[in-house]
Amino acid sequence: MAARQLVPDRIMQLGLGFWGSKTLLSAVELGLFTELAKRSLDAKTLAQRLKLHPRSAQDFFDALVALGMLRRVGTRYANTSETALFLDRAKPSYAGGMLEMCNARLYRFWGSLTEALRTGKPQNEVKTGEDFFGTLYADPQRLEGFLKAMTGLSQGTARAIAGKFPWKKYRSFVDVGCAQGGVAAEIALAHKHLTGQGMDLPVVQPVFEAYARTKKLEKRVAFYPGDFFKDALPKADVLIMGHILHDWDLGEKMMLLRKAYKALPPGGALIVHEALIDDARKQNVFGLLMSLNMLIETPGGFDFTGADCARWMKKAGFKRTKVEPLAGPDSMVIGIK
Image (cartoon, rainbow, N blue to C red; front, side, top):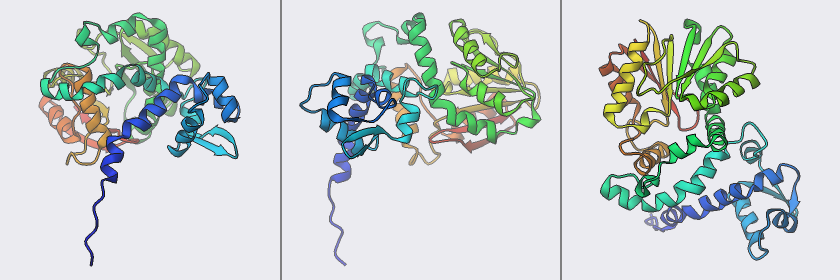
């Protein structure tokens, strides 16, 4: 049998992957998917609506077709079912806010990944003395857009948590670092016997409460203002930390786990959900790249495996732990006090 001839195709596709990424990010920035949500358009009309130069507009649109982000029927372009749901700014399911942030910030910061790997230091606004989150939380309009994006990204995971965790055993929960309240809302909608709270910085309260009203949950889901580093966590049967622990170094992770243990009653549960790296550290590409993103964005944050988190939970005092897959790259670790 002849030896398989090696070719560099896979290497080149990965190395040039930023071409496709930036094509999508620019399409989101331009509002292309929102425009096509109104009706399908031909290339000339779509280019005019987006104020694009005619030189490469058709190449741009056809590249998005080839990338699976658009459909073309005859000469007219339309959204796919996924881009219609998640990239139309007019829909509550819009998840493009995160991509907008990636386009405006992370794309250029990731250009300094080599420096980050050599120095172990963040490569974001910190390098120039700025504070991204401080600026974000000071601008109500930008903050609301960011929090809505978190909801769009977490809906699948939230529904999986609502369906897979044994909520019948419990009466109350708190989502720590709740953002707009997407996770809390999905759980409360699925389980009418539960009352819930969302804990976050006080500036988040109007956004959270407005979202709860749209879901008709204002009587069962309340906002709890606080700083989870400075303040004790509110008491409840179940505490949830979603995409929280990966922001911090190991000492800070352990401090938050111990705070959670202290706030829970005997038999209470902590749910940690993240893009957990698989225990063999070979498969969950998103989780591993997210950990590199924490290198870019934070002084000490990193992602981790389910086995890592279970070990930390037991060190914090939890007597039983369980790791369970959720949606996409996300999984949860459950700790029982």
